Structure formats: structure tokens, C-alpha cells
Image 1 (cartoon, rainbow, N blue to C red):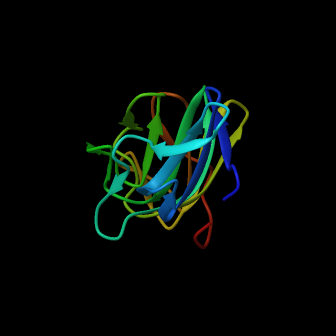
Image 2: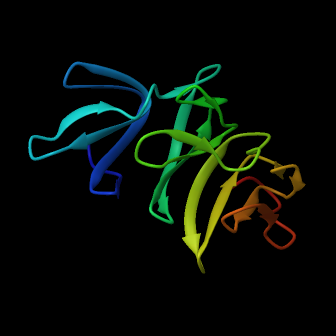
Amino acid sequence: MRTRAVCKGTRIGWSLVIVAAAVLCAGALRATGQDYAWGPLGTGMGGTSPYVNALTVYNGELIAGGYFSTAGGATCTHIARWNGSAWQALGSGMNDAVYALAVYNGELVAGGTFTTAGAVPCNFIARWNGSAWQALGAGMNYYV
């Protein structure tokens, strides 16, 4: 497994189901310390066939996007943030899966098969300004 992101000094990796150092994790896991012992990020993602498609770091927090309805037991529809100790929602999330995440001009940009982000109409792409979801222009003609 390769490191996908580093957040607060912790290497992060992901997959649908990961088995590393005999730890089974759905969604995401982390390696800490010099020995890189893998362990879960909370209790992982939940829902019907949960998976993580994308990770990025935004404002010092790990952001996970994918197809899930909970993260660490918290309701997080398709997108969640890890603050170093717990998963939290980003607004009310999306109405369908997130496939891509990036940070651009200080905002988090998410792309996927969703048409609403935080109840705001958007066509497959939206931006998070730190407190609310907004459409990114007219959006895209097809999912990102």
C-alpha cells in the first residue's frame, strides 16, 4: 500500500477494505510512528457497500470522499473530514458519490455523480468555502 496523503504527521491510505498489520478497516486507515503500524481512523466508513474514492488535506484536516453514509458513526453523506481524532460532516454532504477532491484558491473542490451539495443544486462539481457548499459555475455536463 502506498501513502495517499499526510495529515498532521500521519500517513493515510485507503481502499474498500484494507487488511494491514492484521487490522481490518473499511474506508481509511493510518500509519503512525517510525514502525508505520497501521490502524483505523475511528470505526471507518459505513453504509451499503461503503468505499472511499478520494482523499485530500484541507485546512489541516483529512477529507474523504466516496460512497458512504456514515464515518466513524457520524452521519456524513459521501464526504467527511477527519480532525485527528474523529470524523465530522461537511455540511449535509452530497446526494451521490464523490470521486475527486482538490484544493483550489483556498477552497475544497469536490467532483462526482452528485447533483446537490449541502442542498445546493450543482452539476457534478461543488466547492466548500470552509462553512458552506456552493455551486462551481454552471457545473459539468457529466460526472467528474
